[in-house]
Length: 77
Image: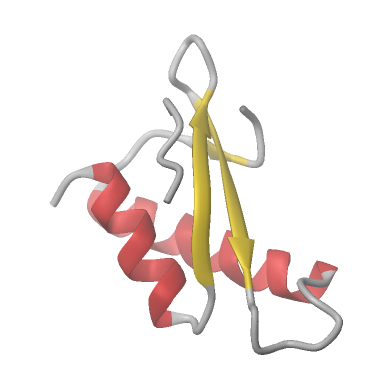
């Protein structure tokens, strides 16, 4: 499974919508943009932590060497 599919599957599996993915120029840090249209107040810090923690676990299992939170070419939908 490629990285974009791995991220999208994880984010959607947690009940969020994947909006965008950006990768730093050196390819070591990714930034994942999420949304939850059904939530009246939008995304909060707990939602970000939930996705970040789950992606960290998935990346460890899949042996993906990235740091969550930084700046992959856009995957805008």
